[in-house]
Image (cartoon, rainbow, N blue to C red; front, top):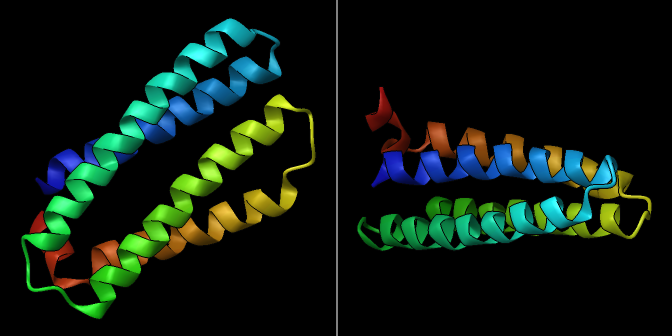
Amino acid sequence: MIHAHMTAWFLALVLFFVALGLHKSGKEKGAKIVQMVLRLFYVLILLTGFWLLFSININIMYVLKAAVGLWVIAMLEMILIRTKKNEKASVLWIQFIVAVLLVLYLGFSLPLGTYLF
């Protein structure tokens, strides 16, 4: 399940940048389709993440990682919305970078993350 969760995250990030590029190039119909597929990946991320969270002995650090993961998803969606509306999103980009770095640190430093290697 860990690999499914990580694959969903990776594909979501790729789809995010594809949708962002389509928005910037003015291809709104394609961007909307990619954004809807991205939202499906949000659901997959949430399902696999909750499955992982509840399949272990819940520790406060895992709950913190889940909260930061939700923060990353929120930033992805808000950046796309602001880009679509041609509004400034620099504060959201900073939050996104901080949240991604934090979730990666937590994900790979917690004991469940060490099973990947």
